[in-house]
Image 1: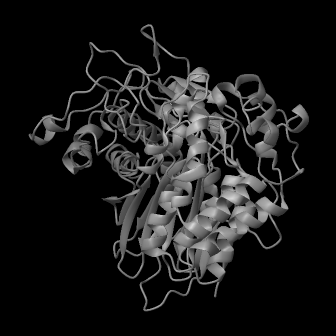
Image 2: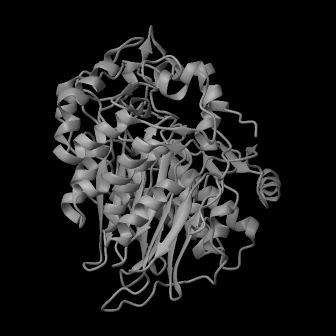
Image 3: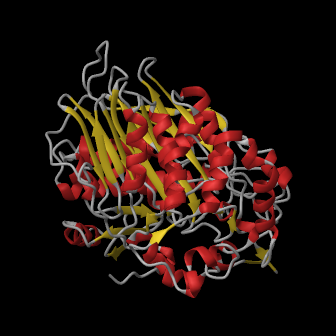
Length: 583
C-alpha cells in the first residue's frame, strides 16, 4: 500500500488479530441503558487497545485480577515500544477513571508542561511564525513528559497489582523483540524526507538501521528502553525525573537546531494532577470526560447542541447536518476559551449551562459562514468571560486511545500522545521525546490580546484529547470511548456517541461510519467509507464548504455495556484489537 502524508495525515491499515483476540464485534441490538446494578459484576473484563501486543498486556493484568488502571499502564508501556509514532513515555496524556463501587468518575492529568524558560514568542522569527515543520523538529517543541508521573498517580490511587508487575510485558518485548507493524513502517520512508528522524542520534540508528527504514514484519529489539523501564520499575518515577534519564532528555532538548530550554530542573519539578472530571446530562445518560486543558467538555456540548437542532423524526441527512452544526459551534467555543486552567479561567460551567446551549442551538452558523465563539455572559447575565484573541492551533495526529473495563466493572478511558508522528524525533534513553509545545498557539502579537492557549512558562498546552466515559441514569457504566486524531478527536469521539445512542448503530457500525469533522468554515468528509460520498453530496447541496478525503486518522476504541455483556470495537483504520474474558 502506498502511503501519502499530506500535513502528516496517514491513511492507516489494520492488522490481523490473534486467534484469541476480537478485532471487531458483530452488530448487536442497541442497549439504551446499562446493565442493572447488582451486588457483583458478572460481565467480565474487556480491553480495546491500539496494538495486539498492548491489548494482550492489558488482558494479562486483568486476568490476574488487576484494576483497569493496572491494565492501562501495562498497555501503554507496550504501546510506547510497538507504536512509538503515536505515544510513549516521552509524552503524556489524560486518564478518566470510573470506580464502580462509588459510582464516580475521576480525571488524572498527565499533560506535558512547558519549560520554565518558555516564552510566548519563542516560535516567532522577525515577526513571522516559524513554519510547522521547523517548529516540530526543534528542541523548542519539547515539553516535560508526564506519562510516568501519570502512571504513578493512577497506580497509587487505584492500582491492585505491584508496580513492577506492570512493566514486565514491555520489558520482555523490548528485550526479546517484536514485529514491526505496517503502520510504523509506513511512516518511515516519508518522514525521512520531511523530518530529522533519520538523522538524530539514537533515532537514526533505531528506525533506519544501515541507513534503511525498518520494514514491516522485521524483528526489532530495544534494550535501551528495557533498561529504562527496569530502572523505573525498581526505583519508581524518580529514576525517570532525575539522574541519567532526565539528563539525557534535557540534553536532547537543548541540542540544535533551534535548541530548547528544557532543563533537569524542569523535569524534576513535573507533577501529574488530579482534577474533577467534567460531567453533564444528556437525555437519560451522563457524559463524563476530561476538563481543560483537555477538550472533553466538547462531548457534552456537542451532544446537547445536536439535540437542540435535530427533529424527532429526522432523516439521516438531517441528523448529519445537525451533527455538523453542533461541531461548528462547539469547536468555535473551544478554540476561543480553552487553555490551561491553572493559568487562565476557562468558563466550562457557563459553556455547558443548558440556557447557553439552547441559545447557541437556536442560532446555528449558516452553512456558508465561518462560526465564531459565543458569549455565555450575554445569555446568562453573569460576569463577562475573558477577551482573548482568535486561536487556530493545529494538532497533528500522533496519538493513541484505549478503553478498558476490569473484572469488577471499573473502567478507564485513556488518550496518550507524543503529539506529531514520532514526536519531536529526538531520542533519549530508548524512547522519543514529544513535540507538545506546538500544541500551544505558536503565533504572537504583542499588540493584540493574548490567546487563551498562549505559551506560558510551566503551562500545559490545550489538547483535543477527549477520553470519555458515559454512565446511565443510575450512574452505572454504559460506554467507554475515545480516539486519537489531533483536532479531529472531539468529532471522532462524538460520532460514536451519537451513532450508538441516536443513529441505531451497533458499536462496530458506529466506529466504522465515515468520519465528519466540522471545525471552522470547512466540513471534512471521509468518502472512502459508505455512505461518505452520499453525505458529502448532501452537505455540499446544503451550502457547506466540503473537503472530501479518502480516509481519516481515527483510532476509536469503544466498549459498550449491555444486558448481554460487554461489546467492544476497534477502529479498522488502525491496528487495534479487542480482548475479553472472565476470572
